[in-house]
Each structure stands twice: as structure tokens, then as C-alpha cells.
Image (cartoon, rainbow, N blue to C red):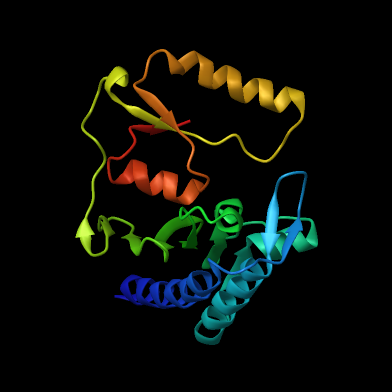
Length: 209
């Protein structure tokens, strides 16, 4: 029962943050650079603050790890055995800045270092992915499942190039893609790792590289 309560709270937080994203999507954004091409907006920060305030009010003894908090501190918090909420308040920030609708709020809860609850919400396309460990995964309340396809040549592969632009990283990335490209039907880069994984979970893509 506790897990279902955690899920309900995460869904409420994701939908509240999603409303901020939805209202800001077609407006001019205040954009900052975290790297050469890695972006952050005031909406990222507002969503993370909203989510953490919502969760801390209900679970003050839990731990919290957030993308924008970690980026601001220049470090990543260590995952402990304590119940820990892991939040990417706006996955797909570059898409958000460019008006491409593959953006989402991603909230996960680990207990004893085990992923237990997950919520991914795309407010632009009105897609809510939810899961509780051992109880299946759902899209807008309907069960989802991975593709039964077992032939690569009939499959789509989804991947991302990341935000690093040094030659070594780009060469590694393109070499991995090149090795598979002639074996698959096609490749997609949608700009949100969370939505990519949800796509794998509901059978849109066969695999993520």
C-alpha cells in the first residue's frame, strides 16, 4: 500500500510540474548553458523546486537527488539505502527550448537502492507513464509491454549523442551507431532519455543504445 501511495504522490508532483512546462512551452525561454550544447532554463529550476517542496512536505526524512541541484553544486549525491527520490524536472530541455514536444518530468523512488516507483509525464503530448516494482508498467492507465520482435532488421533503435562534443566521445558514439546501423530498420534520436526508455517499455523501439 505504501508503494501505491508513493506513486500517487509522485504523479501529483509530476502533473503539477508538467503544468508549468505546458504553460511555458510556447513562450520565450530564459536559457543558460551548462556546457557547449547542454541547456537549462528557469522552467527546469522552477519544476525541480516545486517537486522537491511537494515531496519534502510529505516525506521530510527521505533523501533527494535532483539534476539541477546536482549541476548547481557541481557534484552528484551518492545513492544510499534510505528512501531516495531521484528527479529530472525537465528531461529534454533542448527539445523544450526548440519547441519539440518530446519533453517530460521524470520522478523515481529507490528504497534500499532498489528502483521501486517511477513516473514519467509528457505534458505536451499528455502521456503519463507509471510503474511500481513488480506490478507492471502503464501508459495513461493502460498496461504496456515491450516488443516481441526478435529480428534487428525489423526493429527501430533509439539513441542519443549526448552533450559532449570532444572528438573522442563523438567518435565512440558514431562508431557504436555505425556497427548497428546496417543491421536495423532505422534509428531515432528523440532528445529525452526517459521517454526513450518508456518507448522501449511500450514496444515503440526494440532497444536503446
